[in-house]
Amino acid sequence: MESVDFLVVGCGPAGATAAREAARRGVATLVLERDSVVGCKRVCAAGLRPGFCETFDLPRSIVHCDTPRLALFDADAIEYEVAFGPGHTTTREELDSVLADLAAHEGAEVRTRALFRTLRRENGRTLVEYADRAAGVRRRVTARFVFFACGATAQLEGASFGALAMADWREGLLTTLQYRVYLDRAAAEIAYRTLELHYYLARDGRQIVAWMFPKRDHLAIGLGVMGKIDAALLRTELDSFTQRVRSRLYPNSGVRAVKTEGHLLYGGMPRPCAAEGGVLVGGTAAGFVDATNGEGIFEAAMSGRFAADAVVSARNDAQRASERYASATGRRFRRRLLHRVQIMRYLERRPRRFGQLFEQLARTPRLAEVLLKEDCERTMIDRLYLYQQALRFGARTIAGRG
Image (cartoon, rainbow, N blue to C red; front, side, top):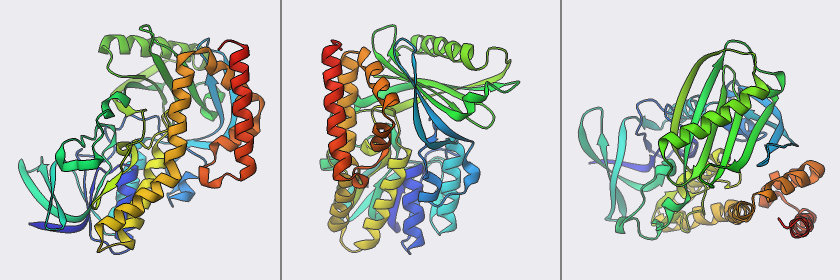
């Protein structure tokens, strides 16, 4: 039976970062990727926060556009500009494939068309069975550590996953649809400097988060809605939103081609337990996603780094590695992401609150600056300032009956 030290399931930002950094430090690493081409089926606006390439030592060639503007639109389509960055855009094909190549360069083996099936603990190790779709057979591999980084579709249920299982995982899933719109002439210049996020209600009353992110050769225009939705209704919603974007940004451009992509994303609570007995969960599979805007690439890559650190620091002690990983991700992400879920739910109860919040962000640049910081980067003065701004926002919503 095949045996490795570190088995990674999924080759997105979390899995590839974990594989790259563990292999670089001498850990025998194998990555199982279900798709035939890494990154080929990732539906994602692929916005990167400022400094992402430098933080994870990635080539700047993956960046399509530098975007100093963040434009937030409320339910009445009123735009609020927030200073940001600059952020960056890319595509998941480029990001994921570059990360996979870097992992392979460090010595990790990336095995495509390998679909995870089951796991069980056996003699102090974890035995994983997967479908080798290239050969049409089932294979088994044992590992000292396993890192699940398989995105929103992660099926971590049943007795074999123990405390890692999350009964209400499906309640946090969002159905998304995105168009890649290829134009015969450039859109308005401002489009290539702006990340757009739109918050409004669908025809059935559910909250929609929609986006327009510019790329080198196309515009990514998409939306997500919580839970399941009829496919025809979802497409109708996206067509309507796309027309709104077109009327502002490219009314006189012809459309050469449109590529349609659909998938599940996640926008709920983080997984309560992200590590146990040498089995770790990271990225979107762990719920490390900002519910207010769907951002999860930074959290995914950082969780991969934490997984590699835990494996390297406790190579012979699976439980200690699990505790180290859980502690690192908890300190870095959990409180902030829980707060973001609570904020999103508060705003959704009275949609006019989105406009009130966006106006406050636009008028107080420091608030946006502090919100972009990680918890570990905030000073006590930053925290007091956030409390002050939260009280101000609460007072405004009460006064405006929001």
